[in-house]
Amino acid sequence: QVQVVESGGGLVQAGGSLRLSCAASGSIFSLNVMGWYRRAPGKQRELVATVTNSGRTNYADSVKGRFTISRDNAKKTVYLQMNSLKPEDTAAYYCNAGIVPRGGYGMDYWGKGTLVTVSS
Image (cartoon, rainbow, N blue to C red; front, side, top):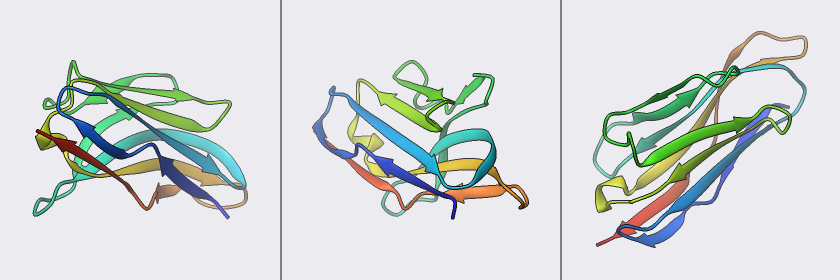
């Protein structure tokens, strides 16, 4: 069974840093775009950053220059380094991965989320 699992959330003061990780596991034929999304209280889910399997990245304007997405294809893991955190970054962060399972069809897989809280 294919799944993606996040880790690394927590409580941090404004200006601090956190690093999120997300590992894909299971019977995977190919792993395509991986990314991070977030949902703040009372708001809709929004894109934070994505990275292709060749390393091309895309960021939301609100995090450019502060967050860095990267991936380790051998480990099937995507990371989100978050620096200069602001209270408005407080949200549940979700990992998304485009995965083709062995013997199956490609689809998006979502993690259950990890909470990031930034105090002022």
